[in-house]
Image (tube, helix red, strand yellow):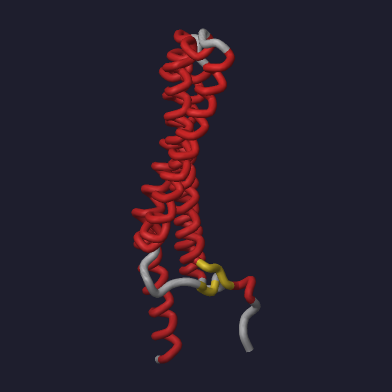
Length: 188
């Protein structure tokens, strides 16, 4: 008799997905930061152009944005599997959640990632409150404000990704050892 499928969790997929999501957030944040700084740099110049040149600038900007997006997709496709393999070692995919020690490791890992996310959000909030928002206000620039928000998203995703990459492989090894210990206890 086998246990129902809802008793199992695919840890390999969970760790890989977490790392991939943070990587995507970082790529989007970098694109937004580049775009917002570019908008700030050419903001007044753009509005001083006549209508025909504005259309040309928008077309060229669209082409550049698509090229950056395609380059980011290329980086994502190349590195997403490598990131996933770095986070999760071989030998673990689906594990039974009824095992108490496995559940403890998964919950502790989740708590660590959540705490790192909260720490990143709070750190960005403080940096935004004391540095980024006043900077954007002094310059009277929405573009700089968007840059600060994108920088915060990048920073938070980076912190969470560091924890996932640093702890994911360790958590995988611990779970494999727990499962091996449970199997050896059963065989004795």
